[in-house]
Length: 145
Image (tube, rainbow, N blue to C red; front, side):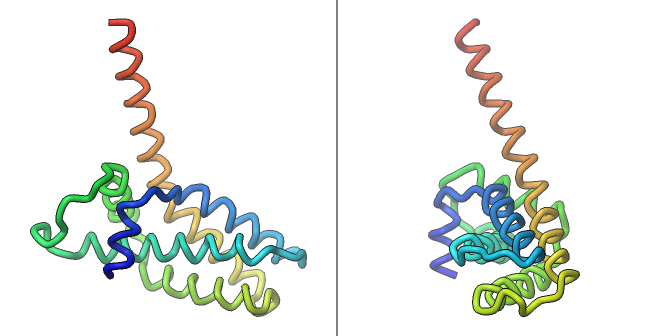
């Protein structure tokens, strides 16, 4: 957990990781070749989601203060999306298998991974978009006001 807690205070863009991974999985589904780095981004995303889930389950007093508001918002969005963390673990294993052997999964399983990644990151993306809009609005009010 200590490695993940350090990662939680770093900057990660889950939507970009999900987009890159979903595109790579689409290429695999069509029989194309994919660079392993693109699939490793999916593993990084799964690790981030798992770390957020574990961090959100811990009692408030042991959490400490996270450096970035974005991570707190990500944790809240993940809780609200009610993603089954066991599916995230399974997706991580499947992505690892696809790195070693791109034909190791059926197209339906690849679509399941894609759907999970999109569903898990959609609420996080929406939360971050709202935060960005709020900051932009505040800056506009400060400059014009």
